[in-house]
Length: 203
Image 1 (cartoon, rainbow, N blue to C red):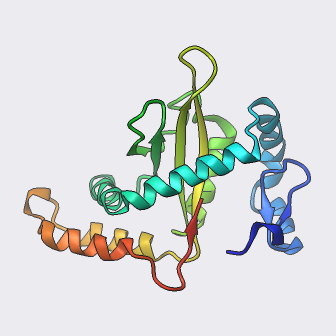
Image 2: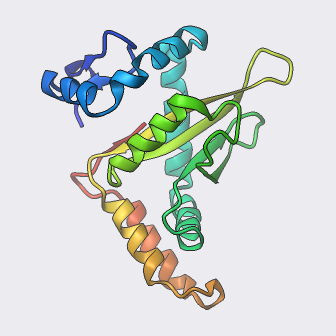
């Protein structure tokens, strides 16, 4: 992970950033970006969100994630335990003043705002990251009467420590959740919520 200014942006869609030309070429040839570049460009034109608004959304999510990180990790643990191998995302619902954060399964095409080529591509990229990316989605009220907008913001980490630890704990715990030692679980998750010195995570 490096400052954004050091990355080159895709000139086609303007949505992807690369640390080197070789990485961009690889993503174009074998990473699947060739097939979805036009779709990302069209989405950016149809549903424009200014850089300032995106920064605000990211700051808001980062704040709420850090504030409730241990509770979120516990929800993730329960989902992994009851739905092994099933992809999921964190939904940050800002359609009211509660700002709820909850786990949702990645059911493709289950929602008009979270479906299609771009959603499928995003879910696939998170899976290929091997624990270094986590999918977060923000829901917010639009100017249309009763309208709701959705934006996906991958949470990026420079290590897979959190993902690996959650998966290991989910596999170790008894099938019956009533028999879990919640004191032990809470202690492990609280420690996991504290980043190591060299660890970075950001939307």
